[in-house]
Length: 573
View 1 (cartoon, rainbow, N blue to C red):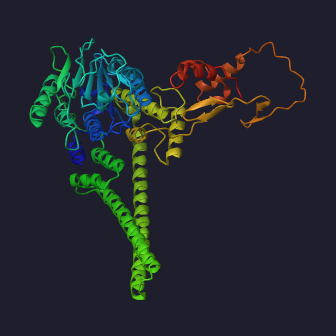
View 2 (view 1 turned 135 degrees about the vertical axis):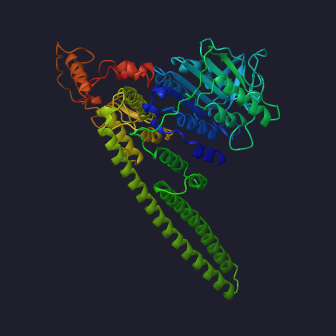
View 3 (view 1 turned 120 degrees about the vertical axis):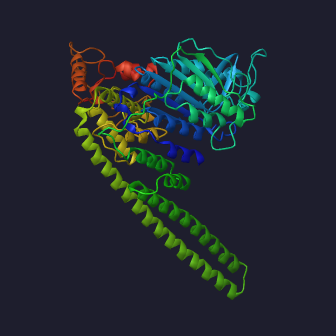
């Protein structure tokens, strides 16, 4: 938890950077930490490393920092696709990956957590090439930076079968030469060598990275030089980080040198609130103690102490429950073995006392839980009130702040779509469709986020969810199957009913209605126009049929065949 303490201690930059011309550039980052590998031993540090890097970038003026952990191959592809969309109008785009990487025939690949890699050719289907990552950062105008803490000694390389004897599987990663200008790729260890995962809570490379790279005004080449020196020193010259790519003659820092002062709109509680929410997300005793070591008093400190009491009550409940169980087992053993009545009486008394202690601990736990829940409810209500006051003055914000609001709206919509709550367009407008999406998230996740406007708090909460939150709702004729809608196929002699179930067909002859000459074979033109009109007026419902541009939107989340089927369906309302 030393890393958490460093994070809490390092949150010194105020969130009002968005209103400063020095920070007007759009900086975005995708952070991936893969620790929980399914087919090989888990890595200890990537989850911690990714959290430290994400917090360092947020504290340095990156508003859009997408933190993902333990991604499978499909999830990594989706994360890169979303990030490429986020990078479209960005000045700086950063991708950080911690986990396993491998080099096959001179090409570098990042390994998802569900990879099996029985054979060398499996790498093309089960891993993500570094070229794919370069495509995700390519739209950025000023700087494209990829940081790979992925040169660890790779167990996949040792067990992988070769289909061709001459196919090379390297140790570490292969040297790269980015083709695009102002593109840098940083390796934790130079090509052909491996890097240490580290004995502490963070790898040596990431520990040095967060220390130097986010220093305001420090040129990146010099910053990575300092990282190299620190890692060489901490590993006794066994590991040497390396930087590939080139920059122009001007200094280029990840964080501008000007640190803006807090304006009249700034919230003095921003830093402590963000650290509180980080500790709340961790939900551990160490996290809360780290928070309290940084902040001695105040509103959030009182809330943190309440959370610690709740944890202590739960620990006491677990301990007393186990003690009561053991005491009852001892009593039953003595009774079964025909022990003396004196011994049985003692055991019975001990079991009774242990059970009373368990009941008392359970009652204390419920009280502390209720107190913590009520305090959290009051905190959220107070922040919603403060958010309403900020919204009243939104029209007076500088233009660059309004642009940042559009970026925030877009990012929150992307995340809501990832968890299955947003079916509308992804743009910079916070409209009825977006509010409905956040409302669905609140109901499904048991949250009370303010739906009237997008907020960094809401973005952090939605990002913290690993998978689908909102249940999948399918149109008539389809049923939910995991994350997709599958067409219902009824066997011979059965038809699909209005209740979306297969029922025995009615064998009675029915008069066939002549098709209306004005109706096309696939869908009525008037229905298309009606759906388009409703979509433009924010009153569109999926049952109205597809609207213009349906295929372009559907292809993002479906296969081409499914998208074509979805976008040629008939209106049902």
